[in-house]
Image 1 (cartoon, rainbow, N blue to C red):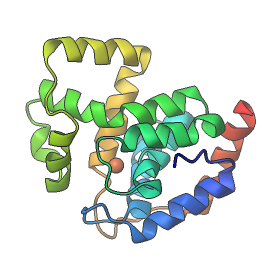
Image 2 (image 1 turned 90 degrees about the horizontal axis):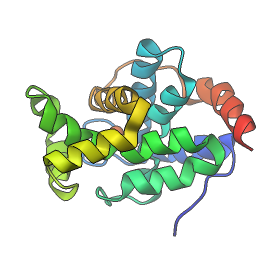
Image 3 (image 1 turned 180 degrees about the vertical axis):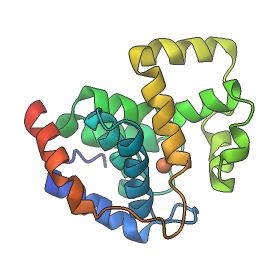
Length: 181
Ligand SMILES: [Fe+2]
């Protein structure tokens, strides 16, 4: 069942449920979400939509665990009504951004976790030339944002890394949801 997340508080509940899901990574999905948001807040303090996309990029894996090929689309569908089209598109593209970076950045694969290399196969592996062009065209002006979201995602798997608590993001979530509803 696909679930649309209807409020900032419901979204924080879903993220909290990520504390008991680890998706075979060294950190649970709540810690992963918080670390990803921290990276993006440091790098793109001017872009709350990108920061929030980092926070929610794996909600699909919390709502429906063990669906690596679909989790990006599941997450995007779950947050679009609440957080808007741009956040949803960033979430939707984060798995393909891995495929793009594996293909275009020679040093990138070595930065991926073992689990992420394993799921890459289910997600289609490296892109061919046509796929690269189509991905860049779909991303448009958000190509760099999407690639930075992906790099933040890959860097957000450090056990014990300090983050602010989930509730610290509530005002940003409320502001974005107020804007789109
Ligand atoms: Fe992730």
